[in-house]
Every structure is written in C-alpha cells, then in structure tokens.
Length: 156
Image (spheres, rainbow, N blue to C red):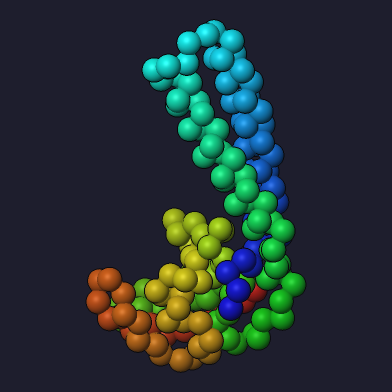
C-alpha cells in the first residue's frame, strides 16, 4: 500500500501549510538580508538562528511539494463496504464492551486525538483487510487486545 494517500481535505491542508511556509521563507530571507547589511556576521547568533530556521523551512517546503506531487486521493478509491481499508471509518468494540471509532488515514493526516489514525499505527495494521463481524487480536504496547469489528463506512 502506498504511503502517500490523502483525502482532498488533507491535500488542501498541506497546500495551505505550503503557502504559509513559503511566506515565512520570504520573511526569513528578507531578515537575512537585513542582518547581513548590519555588518559583522562572525558570532552573530541572530544570523545563525535565522539561517538554520530558513534551512528547516526550505526542507519542509521540499517535503510538502513532493507529497503533493505524488498524492493519491483515497476519497476516490472504491472501498468494500464491509472491509477495513485506508479511507474508512471503523467502529470496533474492545473486550470490555467499549465502542471505539477510528478513521484510517495516510501518515500526513493522522490526528489520534480526533480519531484519525495512520494506517501504519499498530491498531490500524491489525484491523486492515478484516471484515465486519470478525474478532481480531492486536499486539499493542499495552499488551494483546481483542476487538470485534462492528461496522465500517467511508471516511467522513
């Protein structure tokens, strides 16, 4: 499974992040010019920090551009109705009867606090390709847990 699947909303968010970082890059480039015009750069902490920040932002910009260039939209994928796949929201029940809902997304869209987990997360790996009604044993950091898959639906 490819690592670069995004929702269209995720693509839009990365595009906004790119624009924000490009704006910040412009500001830092301007700041560097001003610092250079002040004169002596030897031992200038301001110059070093600004240059490092600019380098980090340029790296992040390149990373986002690459992700946007190669992105595939899982909104457009055909997801089997009863199978846990990338781009679906799955409701599971733990051994205590507690229902938990996760949306399986690409790495760049993961927000665990909002229930959006990366397909690379251990729980997602244990659920992938399983069907509604199945019980699955998943090895997690806290130990092995058993879950029953109650339902799947397209990501919201």
